[in-house]
Amino acid sequence: VPACAEPLPVLGRDVTVPLVTGGEVTYAALDYAASAPALQRVWDDVAAYAPYYGSVHRGAGYLSQLSTDLFEQSRATVAEFLDCRAGDQVVFTRSTTDSLNLLAAVLPADCQVFVFETEHHASLLPWGDAQVTYLNAPRTPAEAVATLERALADRNPYGPALVCVTGASNVTGELWPVKELAAAAHAHGARIVLDAAQLAPHHPVSVRKLDVDWVAFSGHKLYAPFGSGVLAGRADWLQEAAPYLAGGGASRKVARREDGGVDVEWHTTAARHEAGSPNVIGVYSIASACRALNEAGFESLVARERHLIAKVREGLAEVPAVRVLSLFGDDAPRVGVISFVVDGWNSSHFAAALSAEYGIGVRDGLFCAHPLVRTLLGSEPQAQGECGAPEAAPGERSLNAIRVSFGAGTPDEHVERFVRAVR
Ligand code: PMP
Image (cartoon, rainbow, N blue to C red; front, side):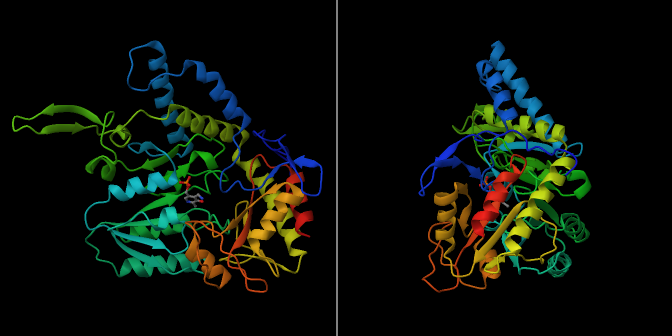
């Protein structure tokens, strides 16, 4: 790998964990898809800012003004990171889940929603009362586009419609044909929201070039911790609907009416959906991560990740008992998220052994994408808890899977240790 041959410095690189076999080892965090470690650079930026911390949009004091400026500058940084169009709004939320629930809350009446059954539950479930059409799992990107086109052609062409699609699967890591799906949506008068929770940490996301109407992502997967997320895109539906949360910050003017009630004038900016004191540290850390990733350069980050993906894929291919899960086939382009099952192994026990014997942290379970995992395993996962890990009886087909995921902070040694351990 020519450029960016070194991983970016992240927190927790030197953490050691005990092994059941005796001794200890540095922790190999290979669960970036759940939460990535924070970039050291983000942590340093936050530490430098922390003494100047003050209330956003609410104080006359110097530190309050400074925090307000940093908060609004962070909004501009995120808009630039996402290559937003003029007029797009960046709303700060708690997470991708929160962002998509916010969008669901502002849908126009009678909006039809189209979503593939392969989505993460955060994209699959928020649409509540809307008329939702669940699309069957496609086996190629082209089939995804054809499936969507067929469904949209059948819809009532006069009502509003929204398509929700992931950019990169949190189970298979496979890239979805977002640009083509957006073109199909628009050709049929529908809008599209991109769930970029797994895409944004690995690839540049351009709202303009992909021509999506909204994009959602989470800070904690983008090397910025602290409970913040983003919904960015078209202002109209956001501003035509009632605020997602009612309260201070969202309201411009509140007055008692003569009949005893209360009149409220809501903001028509992003603030409309940001009631309550905002999470300035979380927002600042997202902006810091955006800057750090841009400075490192996605070209070299992608090149390095490809090299890690190849190492894992080649290593797993040498173990006949391993079956890598894929919707679009082995050669499909993907990010550093790979799920697999091992013949004769219960996936939960396998993941526990990777931790206890090798100090490797991966994820096992159904990854909050039950219908997709069911399709990929050809079995009926019985969920225990929302994202739970059902147990297969000895000798039975696995009911869940193991997921290894990595990114900008992953050294080669971690994936090499992982491959050795699986072998
Ligand atoms: N979408 C995808 C594709 C995800 O991977 C995740 C997190 N696993 C989410 C949405 C939800 O993100 P969060 O938990 O940060 O709300």
